[in-house]
Image 1 (cartoon, rainbow, N blue to C red):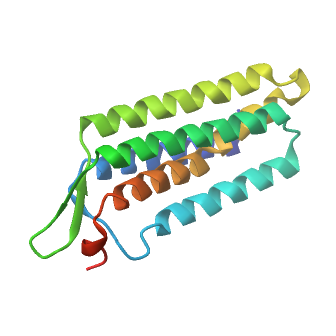
Image 2: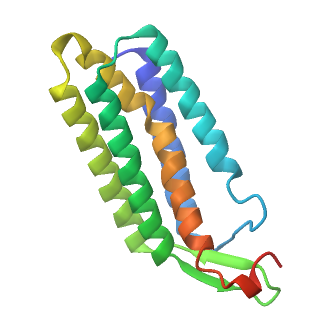
Length: 166
């Protein structure tokens, strides 16, 4: 395993632990510019994928696995966003807090994502399987960006129009 792959995995684990911790905390939601962190993660994830694609040969199956994995991240993020506890504090601040279901959905979603990555590697031609494997680990930041953005979108879509952006 290359040092870049190890670094990607460690970075993703640190970010995921931070995300899981924050999901369980009662936190205010930014109603203006609510997608900033997701955009940063998404841009970083896309840059990593482009850099990887310039270095290794990746099969169409590897790319398909990435796209399917991102779609599962969006679906699980949307479900988490629909199930996140949402309320307005006394001062009008929009608040949210996840629970054990949030964590279970993260774990199942990531396990499914990893399974799809593994399948992409197995189905790729032998000469491109290393590229597909590297794409799976490199795509982790983009997966987190998509999953978090879908969760935020689903959460914000639950706010009645009359109470938005106080």
